[in-house]
Image 1 (cartoon, rainbow, N blue to C red):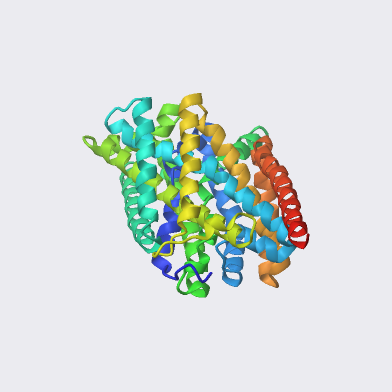
Image 2: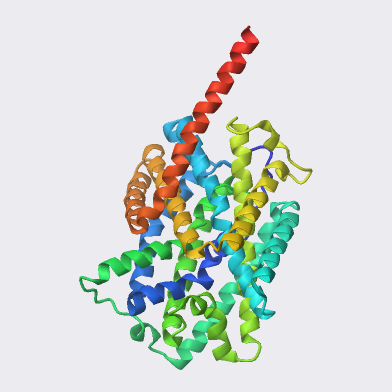
Length: 427
């Protein structure tokens, strides 16, 4: 889009996507999965890496041919028409109220653990995080890309240091903490854990909205997607083995703070505080990217006249300000509701996963229509794999159905309004 500046390079792209994929998941999911599947958790991670690769390849192929701030919704429009585009736009946008709050609250809890913050303190930290993110977003995407790159380098370095410590202690870490022998009762366990593992691979769709802002999209965009997926998959698998080695899992409290727990064992002293700060920064970076992508989605919907022209306004730094501020307000409302009503974060994760995998499925299906040759075969595999993940999530995908109903009513109401306006002008 002409209103968006092409300023992202390969390293910034990887920095943005890696920090987004790692997000709060890397500080939470490996321990949860270990609690569910134990020594068979490695099976869930390996299967998900294999499943997500065709999906990532399909996204990168579509992003090159159809770079647009609308992301998946724009792919769908080219494949099936405007009505399906509107549904996809609403589907993706609906995540803003359930996904980012999970990450922000996780980050606030990490920072709050340093000062022993109570429930009110964590809420205040969460609101403070939102305000700082707003200020960063108003500075433009180039600053955000540089920040995300630095954070990604730090996270990867810390995980590798943890791995070196663990391998020094137990050279046969992989053999000791993996069990690939599956019995009849293990299938349901693997499927359940895969439904959770998917959270660590949510973020590809966010980068799709930033595709038109890459300087060299044909060269850098696919490399960004594939390198990031493989790197994150490797790091998560490695962490799951380390979690098992230190028995850093088993209950909600330990699962949420397993990184701090392990680092404290490894280096003692200020290890817990360091891990807590790292967790906070990572969660902060993840939400920052999602706010960027959600604001671009609103901008795209406004350009397509699904939303009012009010959201088209941009600043001198090419920041869509009227599309950005509502995203922050929606996240703030959910955070306030969570603390007021004691909403369970695990439930929010599963409902958000239902939305994300539905978005991935729509992108994969559009790839079947828009791509050709070997890329079409990859899109077919991606479609089949998305359906399998959706089965793992089960009834939690009902949120996506609610959004579908809403989008149908919205389109119908909008068409009636436009029709009445036209009749008024003719009269």
